[in-house]
Length: 145
Length: 393
Image (cartoon, rainbow over all chains, first blue to last red; front, side, top):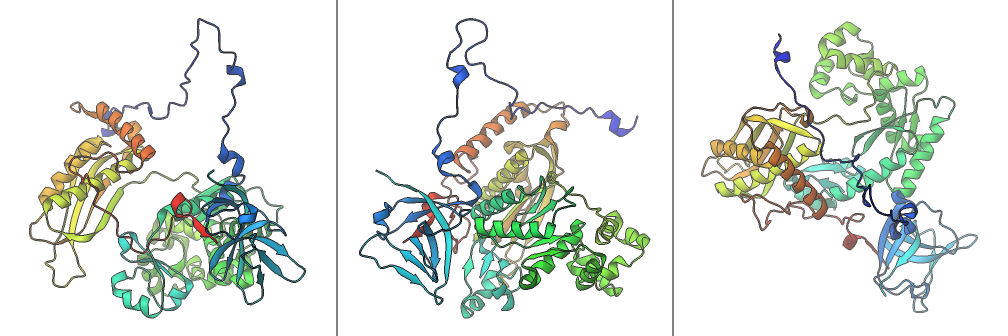
C-alpha cells in the first residue's frame, strides 16, 4: 500500500449552516395547528420600502434651514437614489464649487437654478463658471418627531 | 492625492496628478512628508469599510450584465459574455461604464477581448486613451490584437512577474508581441504550463479560465507595523496573540485548518541608529487545527524562542501555513479538545459577527484595547457608519 492509502480521512458534517433543519414550531402530532400559519407574510421593513435600488442608494444629513419649506429640517436624514434621472422640480443633492447642497432643481431653457425653500435664502443661478454635479435625487426624508 | 497603507506606512494608491509629480508606488510616507506638503498633495489613510462597500456596489451592478463574473480583486472583475455573439459588446461596455459611474460615482474602464490576458490589455488601452475610447476598448480583430500586443511592454503583461520580465528583456523580448512569437516549447520549458497558457491567451485562444469561486487561500498572514516601538515581552505577546486570533478567524471563515505556523519579529530597518534584529520561526502543529487556543499556544511558544531583550521592535506577524480543508482534516488519536474548541470557536465567531470584533479576548490580549491602527488621515465611512454620512446644506 502506498503512503496515501494508509491515511484515514474523516469527513465531518458542516455544523454551521443548519439550512436543512426546519423547526416545526407548532409541533407535529397533536393539537390544532395555528390558523395564522398559512397567512404568514414578511414583516414590514422600512428599508424595503425606502430603498428601491440598493447599489445606488446613499444617505446624507441635512445641515441648516435652506429647505425648511420642503420639510427638510436641520439634522434630518435624506435617502438619495443616484439611479434616478434628475428632472425639473425634483429635490436633489448637488455638488457645487466643492460643497454639497440640497435644493430643488429648476431647469429653464438655457440654465439651471438651485432653489431653496426658505425666504431667507436666495436661489443659486448655475452659470458656466460654476462646477455643478447633480449628485443624486432625494427620494425620502427621515426625521425624528 | 495619495492613499496610505494600513498604519499609514506607505503609498498604495495615487491619483494621476500624484503620479505625474513622481510619487512612486510604495513610497514610505515619512520619507515623502515634505514632498506632500510642497505640492499640496492630499493624503488619506486606507478606508477599507468604504472601499469594500463601494466595490461591492460596483460588482453587484456588473453581475446584472452576465451571470459569469470573476471578482478578481477589490477593483477588478472579469465578465464572461458567452452566447452574446449577436450583441454589440462595445455598446454594452459603454452602457455598463455609464451606469456604474452614475449609480456609484466610480469611474471604470472596460476592456473587451476573446481572452482574459487580452481583456487586461484592452482595458489598459481604454484607460490610457479614455478620451478617444470613452473608456471602452474592444479587441475584436487580429489586426487590433497585433497592434495591442506590440504596444504592450513585456513587463506589463498580466502574469509576467518581475523575474521573468527581466529574463525576457535580456533576450530582446521587449513586447507582448515578441513574447507571442517565441516557440511554444521554449515558453513551456522556461515558464511552465502557466506561461504557455498565457501565450495562448495572448494569441486569442482563451486558455486562462474564469474563476468564479475564489479558491481557498493556502496561507494566511497577519502582519503589522506598530505605531510605537515595543521593547517589552508582554507587549509583543499581546500583539502576537491578537494577530494569531485574527488569522484564526479568517481561517475558520474559509473553513480551513492550519498544520503549521510562522512567527516573526523585527526592528525598524529605516532607523540607522537602532540595533537591528530580525528573527522568525516556523512550528509544526501537533494536528491540523483552527482553534484560537492551540494556535495561540504555539505562536507564543515561537515568540518566546525568538524574542531578544533590548531590541526596539517595529513589526511582527503570524503566518498560518499548510492549510487544509476542515472537512477532510486528519484526526489524531490523542487530541481531546477539538470538539469542545470547535463549538466554542463557532460561538466566538458568531459573537464577533453580531457585536463587532474584539468583544471576546484571551487573557494575554490587552483588555482595554489600547491598540489602534495609525490612521491619522482617515476619510469618513460614508456608506457604513450613520454618523459619518455626508452633510448637505
